[in-house]
Image: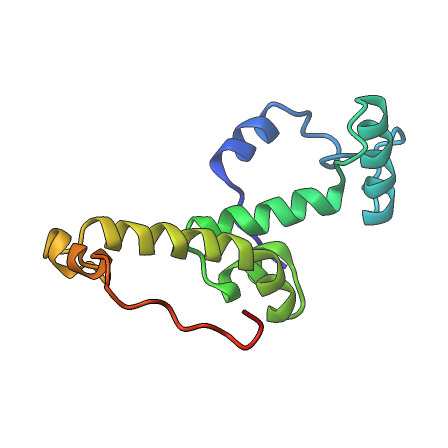
Length: 137
């Protein structure tokens, strides 16, 4: 699978030695996914960040891509998620925030200003009628 490298990451990788794989083991060989996960766990424990994990980085990447407007298919191509359901699970909150922001912006920018309020001031006027009493009152 080929995934383009973000320019910021490419800049960091360009500074690493070219004679061994990225995130190589002490022997200079390529690290397995499980080995990287174990190493990440050790790093987060050493840094006293037990809430952080390799999975958390993948989830953060998924969310950032969603916030940037990437489609579920585009996100899955980058993160390697096998199903769209998994991508949607992680991007749901990002989408909800964006939709909420958009909805409030529409409310603020409504074309008729206060004229399209649901509860006009006259509706708040006091009435001479008493409220209906329930069975328990």
